[in-house]
Image 1: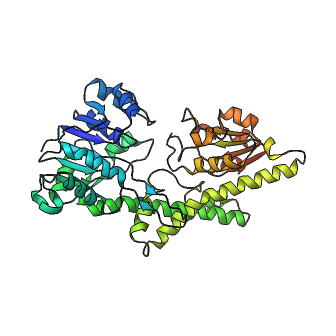
Image 2 (image 1 turned 135 degrees about the horizontal axis):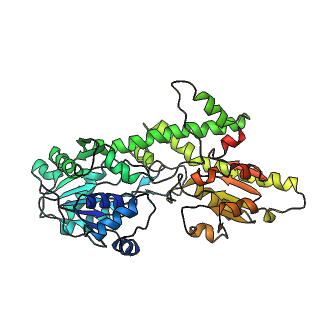
Image 3 (image 1 turned 45 degrees about the vertical axis):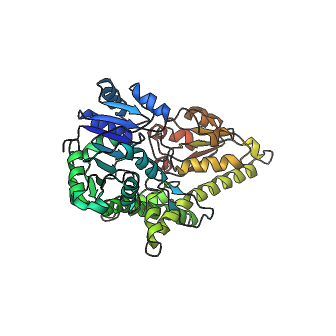
Length: 432
């Protein structure tokens, strides 16, 4: 089948770039989002998120008439669902969080009324194993007049597949096209149909498999990364206890030809690595012991950074007997979950800043060049969004949380400040 019209549900960090790429291949794209501001912004040919080259692609797609955004799905040949899949917060912090599939459920129910025989529905959202089958069940419940793969197999009226994104924020427009894609169908015919759709823009290989394997492949990739980050983060805690410079330690250990230790940080953020391993743990809690341990190490790293800030405040007060905590100003460099993006989702840097803001009575400054306004959780506590230069001029304690490129040239000034806590190795070379 020739997929001339594609409906993309969810116009966030994955959905909008995907919609723009399809539109760039002269497919008519209907973009759907519940956020009216996002819809209006896109229809003006502008974007509501930060991603290199995305603004150019969206502007061209809208101007040429290949992309239109709306708040409700419309008939199409293929439907892509790219909505959030968070986990449910638990009252007990030690409990394994449960996946929250409510966004997928609502997206499926919104798409169901406009489905037609021969349509293809693809779940792009990173999901626990079995989520694609659950989505198909919700679709079947809403459209009993159509047949679906779970009942009709290869003869189903509607084909259903899972194709998780595998892109790096800041390089999405490049990696959507160049990276290999794992495409899992509920039947082989579903996988072939989805592969045909993605081949219109994917230059990498389209690797066909089952829906469950595709779901698990994405979770496995991010769990692998989480375990390796946890090793580095745990090593930084051990090195601190033993009075060893962890940055030098890793630099020396990595001279071994078969060792490649990652750099420690304040934790792990974003919607993928900080979330996906829990999907594995929630379904196989007795077997996923290493994956759970890694997630707990990374989830606990912000506690360690907060404790270092508290110690720094106490040391500063001891050095200045006439001062009070209210006299000390703390500056946070970086709030995003990784360098050079504006994405604050599950950001350990933001978590650390918010926790300190709740308790510290003195001045609080945030330097985040990729956003225009602070989240309410910080601004309501009196935190000010300032330039790096202003922060260095006013702060008694400087905390490096995110290694944005624009911060690297500040090493001499930062190191000359009263106290510098480098949680991400931003200025490690300046200390060497």
